[in-house]
Image (cartoon, rainbow, N blue to C red; front, top):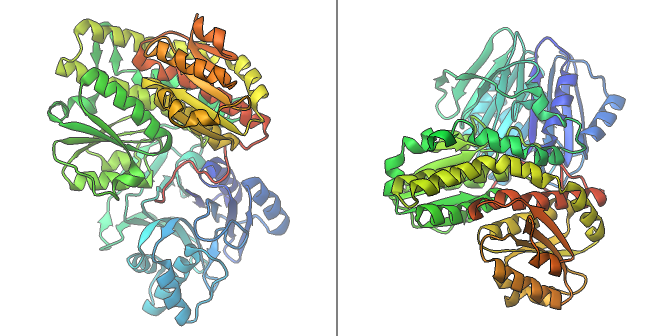
Length: 615
């Protein structure tokens, strides 16, 4: 949820840390803070609000000198967003300073015990409890900071990524992780710490990603020493070369990351099927599927677990797998899956979907499925993420960094990967003919160009957005493959404009939602020519007779819906199973433009964070 940045080395820490916080602000942005150490004094500044608020405040109230610094952007869990609850936090003595991402579940019991020992607390956070627990261990065990961190964390229940330093050790930072990502950038006599690699990509291409229940003691002139938290065993860390480049995490001339990422979808889809979709040879090559084909062919069913937008991609996949490969599919909210004692067997395949690869609920579902003997396949966007490591096999989307909190290209690239999987499995099972298979491959290859064509509706969508920006409710309707797109369209509008919106199967409208329809209600109807078209037209007539305002998403050249709807947005024609890759585009644009017109923070909507690393 939160963003962590740290630096120790020969440079001034402040410019690196503040820029890093700006890049990580998508992870948490209700408050922010920085602690700098110049070898003599710790200088700390923190505030409710954005990183820009912190920058203005900090540069007015403290000196920014010092070659050791840690910074944090917060997404509030324990304690409301305010200056006091913002990170970093001091220990009672003022010697230790900590930043923390995650939740300490047993913080209340620890706090009561520490209070009995004379510790006092200024904030409502679990983090202040943790730093004082570390101090208490350090003092009572008469041990160094690294050992104190290890002992303290063995008393903690919950999830965390932390960075902590001791003012008596100006050349050392100690970090640790359990359930929240933490990367260490390795330079020449300098080290960078961050929740992901974006804060230090221009300084080094070499990084270590800590595994769960690992900690690292980082010392200038001595390097990085990684140990297991539970038993103190020394770990030989794997250093990987980063593929991320600076241009990918900048806005590139767009007003917002979200708009940039909407427009990146044609190339992101191409990158996702590049090397996998070999149309000329009528082949799909996916190592994670090929190497485990026997398991896929023997599976009794597929269970898809995901949250939010990834769950909607999973719903699209349910239709695609069942239609093409004729295998039963269930789609589960990962947040509910582990708590309802699900029936899972060794003959089940569980597909876990997550953009970040760090979604706590999805990780918990993976661990449950593995404990029951199921084969778990991961679909995520971030190389080296927790889900990539926890699953038995998997496939990366190649969307590139997605900074906007409201997912766009994650959705379409996830559908692309899942479509490739379904097609490969269908061919292996013989549930589609070789000519049908080739036809699907040819059509999938044309999708990026058709997305580019769909994006040309942007100007008209902006006009529609201006008409309906003051609506208080929206209804989104779709059938079949496009029912999940209706859900996703409604979610996008809710996320970034804060307008209440609901998605429904079009046929369900008459079982309740039709009572809401009047002349004030905009209804977005996905009515492509493929799949139940006549039925959807009938639904539109029902809306029309109740004076609802109809925005139709239609196949290019459509005439029937055009006669009924107040507005129609055309998308190119494609196979029915691939229409979600096109129909979602105008819905993303509609949400974006309405949010901009309402002066909302499009990239950082209130109360939301990009990587949800708490349950």
